[in-house]
Image (cartoon, rainbow, N blue to C red; front, side):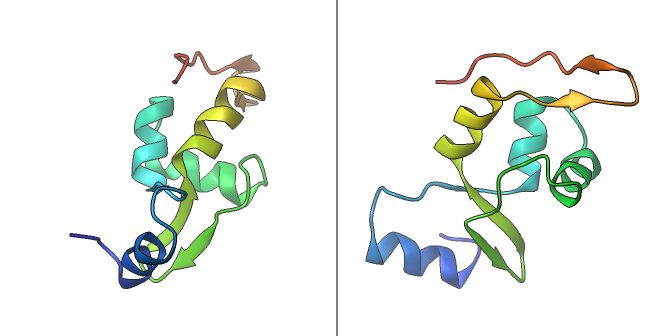
Amino acid sequence: PPLCREEKMYKEEDPGSFNPIGVAEIAKMLNVTRQKVASLKHHGKLPAPKKVLKCGPLWDAKEISDFINEVGITDNRRKQWIELPKFK
């Protein structure tokens, strides 16, 4: 079952075109904390979420994986690139 009512509405209206993921899933993809993902969002280093609900921001999984593979994420505190696996 969907976590948010809006998520269910998206799937019913346009099936298959929006695969929602949140902060926790992105953190797992990047192997960083949820707080780091929230910071990246706050500083404009992630694409804008497709939808923001009471349960938090939601991005499209394909858009995020494409962004990570093409643009990458830097960690300025360490002055290095965060090592990322390639996503399909």
